[in-house]
Image: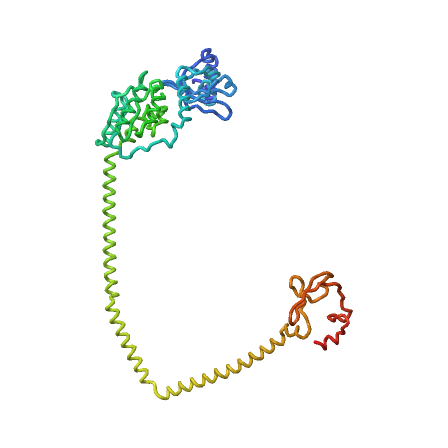
Length: 441
């Protein structure tokens, strides 16, 4: 029976094979950076790819001292290091020790520099973005006349709305004179007063798309008074034109869908709105008809003539009842009523006499308790500076100002001395016996 090995043994064996391979221990690999992530530990995890393959890679924090630039998506680099097996997961990856830019990296630097400059100038600001018209009738296209982009735009436009007029400016989208051709096409179509422009091309490498990263094209798009939709390359491709344009479409096909409204859907929505409006009007008319009938019934019910007749009849009935009541009252009843009225008047007069006598008694008692009457007998009402009553010498000190109210006026005085009452004679004045004071009162 053949030997059976564990997963760990197999991974360890493969790792040992990679470690013994001289070429894998000292290798330089060229590729495009993607999925780049800077970990909080300082390590950089990324993927190197070319047209058909990809490889996981990592640069540990200890080797980042030799990295003279920031690693970002889309850069073409050469990574030097070793290819080893990560035994736990059973996969191999590149452990990079040095990374340098290669070829296209220079273009990426130019892209970043121009992007930062134009952004600082405000050409990417949202306030400059023009809205794309929802129902465009004329669409201008700046692209190559023979590429896949124009065919996709034409097919989608014909399918969505055959009534939209397309205007093509056959521009060079690649090569040395491409930027002048694209800028000229944008300016010519802008002068035609179209509803919207589509500027773009199909996919390609960064060199193929570089014309849309030129400042001349970016300024032409920014100065264009017609709304511009950028449709350059595939969904993952980003150019300077995408930042400046009023709207970015991931592909030329998507740009056609954004620029050309779906006429079939428009007809369907219009029919739906028409049916909804018709049903609403019918319901409204039915409600108005119902309310009209109700108002007609109410008008009959509250007819003024009918109400007048009813009121007249009630008056006649009341008048008859009143006459019968008057006639039914006898002389004896009228006499009893007059006698009751006379008795009630007598009771009221007696009660008035009693109330007047009681009021006179109350007035005399109130007058007897009047403070002014007591003051009139030779006494005074003493207050302090705050007009509060003083009823004891304990409330006063030498030098205090006091007020004394008499029967015919008031005086102010200053305390020069204070003499307290003798024991057993509380409430008497100096030189006055308690009995004398009681007699005087």
